Amino acid sequence: MSDLVCLVADKDMEAALAALLQRPEAFKIRRISFEIIVHPKRDPGVFREGVDFLRGFQKRFHHGLLLLDARWDGAPTDPQQQLDRALEAASLESWARAVVLAPELEVWVWSDSPHVAEVLGWSGRTPDLRSWLAQNGLWVAGTPKPQDPKRAMERALWEVRKPRSSALYRALAGIVSVKRCRDPAFLRLRDALQTWFGERT
Picture 1 (cartoon, one colour):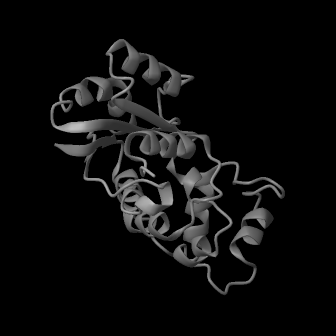
Picture 2: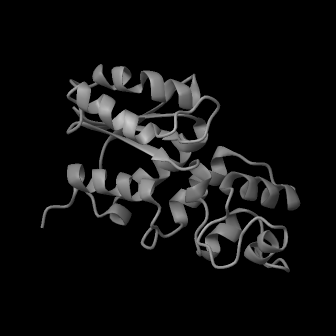
């Protein structure tokens, strides 16, 4: 029996989550076996069909995870709460967790690590990445993240003519420190992994 099955909304999430799960020391968990499946209907598919989908994997995996963005066409006001209720109604609440990224995956990209600028192609540039984003109205001074994380990433990449790809998410998730990350969705993921797979002392 494998440890974890994950249903995610797209290839970028798959790349980021795979890189994170290959860093067990960052989460203070043991090394785990996992499988990540990308839903062909993206965020709406994970939201509408994810709980039923996971139910079919209970005999093959110790735990299940749903990962999706909060922002998509037709998204409900509080997808996290609705998925939590759906997991509870299906008696899966101790076996599985839903993690809804608000507003979307790119919120995990932005940290004060110098690796972010490096991976996004901004090393050694003047102005630096954060200053450029602020000058272009994409990051308000004194706030921990850009107001629109996805737009900020797309504009930063466009400025240096670097294509957006799953490889960027994989690289960032594989190298950027997670110690100071206070994003609620990230903390929810970390807490679930530690509950299920935490190192026993």
